Length: 339
Image 1 (cartoon, rainbow, N blue to C red):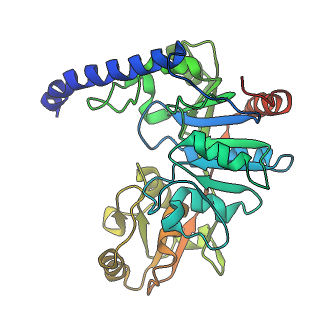
Image 2 (tube, helix red, strand yellow):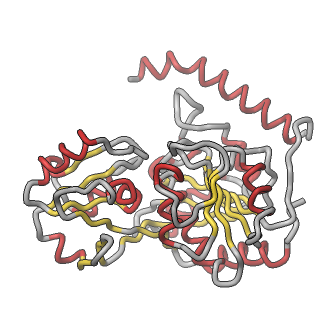
């Protein structure tokens, strides 16, 4: 593995140079960025996958949707459609993608759209009858064609960007200097007992003049399916099979305290085949199946011959969450134009 990393080093340098030139062209306005007459908030990261963008988007929805007409826009990773799609009652997970579909089901009061071309997606949303007052861009930190008014940069505690390297040697999509575009940085998936001293050490290593916040994954007390809910405390004592098709599922398995033989791992955003379903049923036997909320939207229409439930998660913050909330609310309330 170490030898392979050294072999990949030249490619990482080349990739870093290409992304740096691209950022320079946008920063110098040689390549044009477009702004819009509506507050646009970007949630993204410097690295690939697993930083907890969806829980953060949901956090923003809960924060802003009571007071604003809200829309989310993402590319809809691995969806079986192209172009701009605005979710409605007939939209399926295959058309929208699992994460947007999850948000569509969970927050029916907001608009949920997908488009790989974020500029076009925003234009389509703003031309609709239900013109949104705030747009949340999911996973768009490197989408420089759109100039947002507020950038939230995420970095997972177990994979901090300042310890990482460029693709393909590491997991960074662009160099660490990309943090200069961030209005706030959130260190996600922290241990719940992370001390203030440890938080200060991370802030020092980041070294940027930008507010840094710390969040952890909070699990629900209940598991759910389409028809009912059960107390998680009751589920914990039962024989269960835990199925996950997400990036870095280990914390999910650890929280449910299941042995390796009672875990099934699939690729992130995996659309389950008939063969996959048969394998899950064979392994489940008389066990209850627990999965993630994102996986449930891809499994719930597969007619599994076994009881299946999902365990929701949310992003919770340490003591200074009010400061973060105020920063976001102040931006939305006072900055209607992103120029």
